[in-house]
Image 1 (cartoon, rainbow over the protein chains, first blue to last red):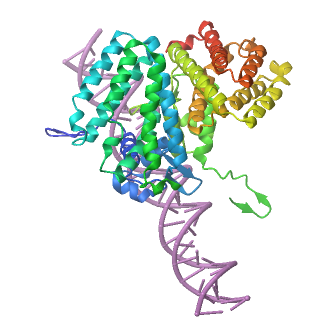
Image 2: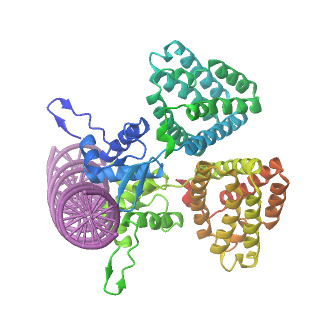
Amino acid sequence: MMTYSNVTIPDNGDSSALKVVGDLKQDILTGYFEPGEKLKMNRLKERYQVGVSPLREALSQLLIEQLVVVENQRGFKVHPVSREEMLDIYATRAEIEALCIGLAIEKGDDEWEAGILAAAHTMQKFSDMIETDPQEWERRHQAFHTAIARGCNSPTLLQVRRSLYEKASRYRNLWLKKNMANSLVFDANQKEHQQLIDALLKGEGDSARALIRQHLLSPSRALEKTPGLEALSG
Amino acid sequence: MMTYSNVTIPDNGDSSALKVVGDLKQDILTGYFEPGEKLKMNRLKERYQVGVSPLREALSQLLIEQLVVVENQRGFKVHPVSREEMLDIYATRAEIEALCIGLAIEKGDDEWEAGILAAAHTMQKFSDMIETDPQEWERRHQAFHTAIARGCNSPTLLQVRRSLYEKASRYRNLWLKKNMANSLVFDANQKEHQQLIDALLKGEGDSARALIRQHLLSPSRALEKTPGLEALSG
DNA sequence: ATACGTAAAAACATCGACATTATTGCATTG
DNA sequence: CAATGCAATAATGTCGATGTTTTTACGTAT
């Protein structure tokens, strides 16, 4: 922490490496670095203004999350994408989400239900703005689904869920990059959300699970068909 | 790879860091480093005979897998254990395994069934040796369950499964360290295995899922009751 | 003349030594 | 006895040495 006279540098107490992890993850998830692209140390040093040690540390962390791959003495590459992996991630995500919901209905309490309604409200109020500020809408949409899943009350499971969300969001972002236009196709179906809430509050686990599978699988179908993802060949 | 005259140095093609990741993971999983223990660089340097750079890299990878934690500028510690986390991991693992089995029954083909029978045979032949070579028996036991899960045909899901297995095996090892004696309590119940196989081959998903939940949850009940794990306080 | 193979050179990744910065423990003082 | 400052310890980051991979340039053979 460094302070000059009266200015306090926003020196996040975090180590330099931790900050890089976040930035680098963001850059991969948003597609700034393309799938399969070689990550040259010099370029990364310039972009993030740090030495190689923090970089190697950051890259090592992303390694386990499967966002980058390393070849023996040939450095790091952005994890390549493929149709198969995309479908597999979305399918797994759908199952995990269904699992969370099933458990949440069993275990969920009043606070859980309240949280869902609150998040739903915050999301629905923003319906008009989907096209204006899709970033923020996605944030609220995600918050809504997280409020539901949270009811499973299992940190371990929720962590798995989060990791899958991140992997999926990479494909989502790659797709959005190519199809700026009609991003609303993605998951703007408010009717499904209402049906889901109804099923949850009534404790209808089976139909809730079916609904969420539908809800999460449609994007992957959209992604699969889209013509813009030649990148998905390898 | 480096060769002198007639001697070929066993220069593992792998980078030094990769090797350390494996060794370090082993040492944490087997309890050589105790939960919550501070991992001092000097000690690690001595033990693995490498510099700090590979060490930091290795630790960074374990960070994401939640086997170590890092405190701001205070270095790395072995991830602490707790009864709650243990129960949560085992419960999640049971659900994930049930999920794998459910999908496997839907999708599994003849090859899958054959793999199960082969692994079951390999395992059962070793029944007598449980007490002689528990290491090897655990290996075969695990191979059996993996053969079943593999039928879900989803790399992503299987990876989640593996990660949970590793986390659970840490608790398992900590327990074994304290209770050397009757390790057979753990998962030696051959009857359950046979019931599981029967259910799988008949395609009875519901009972297969119920069986696997039972099978995976009993160890956690044993762990919970065991008196030797005072360490599990924090 | 072109294509292929080989050898030299440039680029790069990996690792360890050193310097910097932060934290912890202890002593000294109010 | 508490608080502050100083010294020892430890973690983080930068840099340079070493070995490996890739590219380029050149020579030879078809």
